[in-house]
Length: 306
Image (cartoon, rainbow, N blue to C red):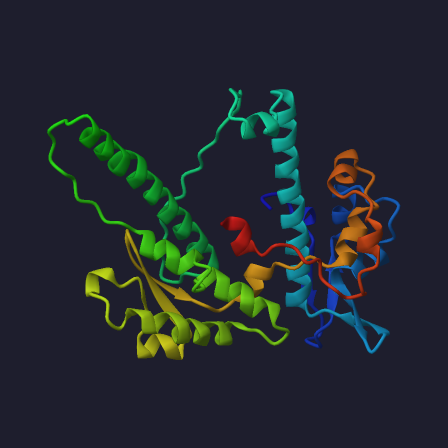
């Protein structure tokens, strides 16, 4: 991204008619070593989508916005699979054995703790919710090991000490990742399953199922709220341990689905780069039977983050 203009693949509007044109696609082809793939096929994989209606297959040209999303989804998939590949290689090099882990035997491992910073901006979206959810989880871990377990140990050994009162953020975590009743991420996943699901319907579902639970709660115990003005704009607030954060639901559904279509996976299968061949192995028989136009049914972003 910080290089010259020829180092990226852009989707641009052409005559405002909803079509897309290619810019610097040769660089995209060279970067992923797709020498054997005609430029037209690369364009079709990223800028067109096959859809099946009543057993008939149609090729639809994507809008510039949809084509950009397809490009971004492919980039994120490459990054994600490469990260998993690196973890696998590290585990193999230190002879990590999951069976030993299950038997609680001594293992050599490398642990990396990536601490997220709590985020609150003028505009907060799905990304901020995921990051702040991670912070809530880390805060609970801190409370569990630094306060709860230590104080239990003091009581066990009859050590005199002053009890430390600390806030319990379990209610906020349940609000976000709850299953029964469903929390924010569960309701979002459900909305993403519907063909006509969208951000506005998701917001209304939040108001319907989550707001009523806060009616009889003390002000200090409230973790979810939405004012009349916020509802008009389809926004909501989560009262995190670090403070109240307003979230705008615009884009939540698309960001959570982050769909990667079969055409993009098939494209990567033609890469001559050895690593890409590992990251994108030939499709299985089951995969090849997928109907044209179906997106790959991957786990949603919110579920992966949990």
